[in-house]
Length: 456
Ligand SMILES: *Cc1c(COP(=O)(O)O)cnc(C)c1O
Image (cartoon, rainbow, N blue to C red):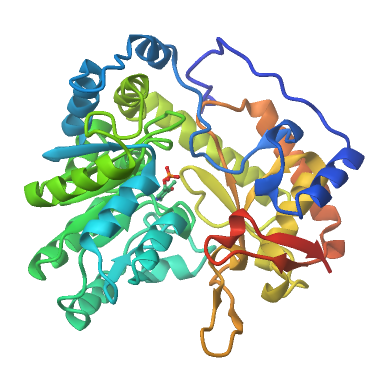
């Protein structure tokens, strides 16, 4: 089979500044060994996130120029609204400055203290927004997701029986249930159409609204097309429409499959709820025809949502992500299987078995990747998801100690990805000498953004 090449050529370039090991050591110390505090000019390959880091197309930049910045009645809003409605089919669309603003508005209007919100796996900001109003964010991943290395087409699925049980048990206290596509917190694994359809039916039986966290809806649609029987010939747009047809609403970070650098939205079919949400929107985000965004941002989203559903683009994206995964595995590094849509997840727990969860093997690997090659990644393990037992004060580790290599959309070339593989090969050779870290300073919530660490 011929190799799949990037389905674009480069029109604008950004220089990368190369750093030496001594400089990186100083940068790490100054940042308290937290890569969120490292200046991007000191990063060679930035795989911290695929959020808002994509390259926009010539068409999107043309849309930016066309943006109409009128406070009310902007045609840019109309084009944005038409695109979102065309793809999702929802009756109401509220623009927000990013995904978490949509989550916060949804949590503040629908969720009360004592409520329970199930999800396949809550993303960190989704969890934080639900917990911020005093509710419980419950993860119900499918059984297949428990074995990190087992193959599986749809390891992002929600556990349907557990969902049904949860809705029984907490009857009257579940304001909505959610499925995150693809499952970011669960290895970037896709969710099948059958699972979405069945979860929706369960929610309907219990009279509970069903939402999609739609950040990577287009990548999920591509996985459905390639892996689920019956969709081999279906256009991605049609698959996306069917996914959304089972939901009562969605939250969206357009910084992912909107292929833009900022933006998001909140959708619903509920008229009364939307009115409440718009009141809150005006309070914190802006008027309902711009919601914290500029007209030019709305134009770029309207175009980007369709570009994300372009088949050659998704073929290239999936194959380049799995190329990185396969080559890291060839270097002897354990990687969550199969490769996720937007990222490769390295299992730092089994790569560094001599570091206990209490000394954060994931964070240790993140630090070494930067030290060795100026590569920035993020820990998805006990730093991000560890919980403190409220009674004993002891820390409960996360289920897995992962490091995520998120791939920005349309940004890095194959030779840059090959460099990342080279760095992994060098690290693999000296893995036994890698040491753990201790947290020396941390905030109450979302500690991974600002905690300071110290090598032990
Ligand atoms: C990024 C993300 C969010 C939050 O979106 P922001 O635009 O970063 O606020 C929510 N859910 C998932 C699954 C995400 O990946």
